[in-house]
Amino acid sequence: MCNRIRSLHEKDDTRHLVLAYGSWGLIAGRRPGAACNKGNPPCIGVGLMRRLAKDFVVAPTPEAYTSKLCCGCRHECIPCESVERERGKKIRGLRRCPNEYCKISFLNRDRNGATNIGTNFCLLIDGRPPIRVFDDQEFEMHQLELQSETNT
Image (cartoon, rainbow, N blue to C red; front, side, top):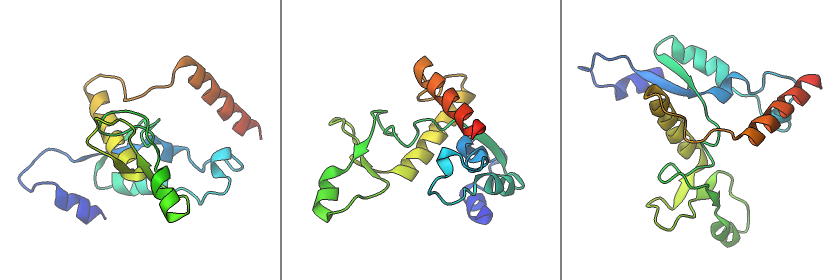
């Protein structure tokens, strides 16, 4: 994987290759019994990040809402109910942008999230806020959730 990433970097480019890495990987799966762990396989986040950091500059980057917002227009994505009805089952990871003027209609949740994490990194390097930040109420709810996970 590292060789493949290296191959994407032009040989005559002397700049360091910086990988924007979603910061959720730093905490996901770290607390036994945490709500995020229920029914989910273990996260490879920290181990993979450490391995990548041996060869590249890795920048942990906020990833709040990165898989929920369209990488093209920042509207909140919704499930693809028409495709799910057609196939007769729920399709995990397939989303669509409800903005009729957006050029992107269907989105893979993981690819969309990765694109938005890269965008967050570029915004933060430029000294601007990320694509979406918690409002006061969301931040308070997040803090309460973390406290309740710690107390269990």
